[in-house]
Length: 153
Image 1 (cartoon, helix red, strand yellow):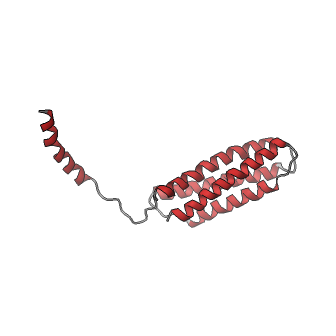
Image 2: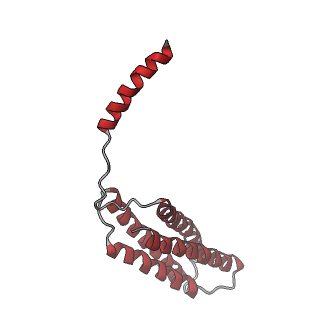
Image 3: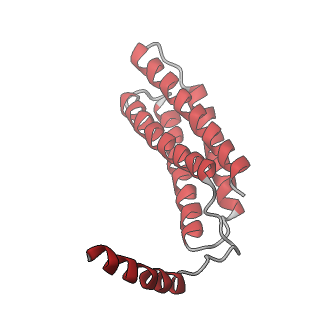
């Protein structure tokens, strides 16, 4: 009895659902495929990890007159890249095209981070280990960013 009820109701529910669901417009959609979204998530996650490492590095070098401003420049680069990615995400979520200048800002900030990390010099093994960790995280973020450029169009 219950089975016949479901068999009678199911086609009706399916018909209503089909009438309510419409195809999403393809114009200006940049949601991306699976690999694109994996790359997007990758750069966000990598920058979050990098931010934590660089903040720690900045704290460690706070009393070092030579390296403190360099570490701060790296932190500013991370903040700038994250801000540009937020701009891109906001555009995508509202169905707009990602601003080219925001993509350029991400790339420029990643380059600035690399330059800053490359200029930090220290004999403290904790600092050098943190710099190496940050450089590895930066490399991973750059790889994910390159994936976004090549896989998201």
